[in-house]
Image 1 (tube, rainbow, N blue to C red):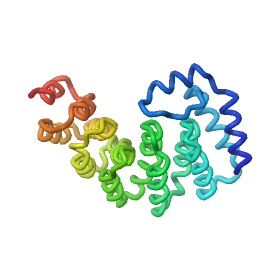
Image 2 (cartoon, helix red, strand yellow):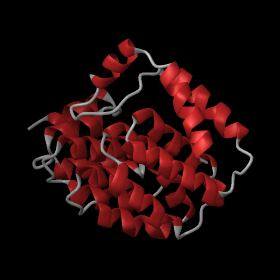
Image 3 (cartoon, rainbow, N blue to C red):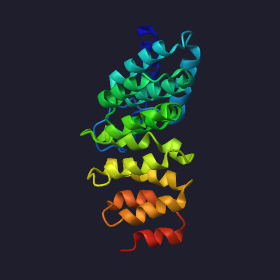
Length: 235
């Protein structure tokens, strides 16, 4: 395991670019650790090294993911997100504890939060919807990234029209949160839910708009028809 990770890390270092690093840092308000690779190169490296794995059992891959996450580097967290999603067919109910630990312990920026939760956690929730109750507990956390994770984990399912009642319940919990990273997360969740349930989401927004933070509102109505956008923004 250590040899593989060291080999992969050396490849990241050898292909890093200072200009890409500086450009990437500008997307974050908080300090982030970045090697400095273009997204296309990073995806290719991830794909090639995952393909070369002889042992793709869940325990082995999860162990590698944990090693990647521990470094704090954005690119290495991408490997953890990508590889854990690759083995989604092996997910079992107890894996929620693993994902919960990762979110609480290692997620420190929006990119890692969204990549891990949109795909790995979102797929898990589709397989085991009873664990949405766990997401609602995340929404009550004091950790901004755990709160954001509670909503962005439903991005892909909500886009498919799934879990609308739960989308509204999580939005209710996060409704008055003053953190714009949280506001953007649940606004995004409402936006994708509206693609399958436009009327229901519009009605929800109209009921909440007097107290909904403007950031959340703008995200939520972004994809709505112009006339509904206008009505949503009217005082």
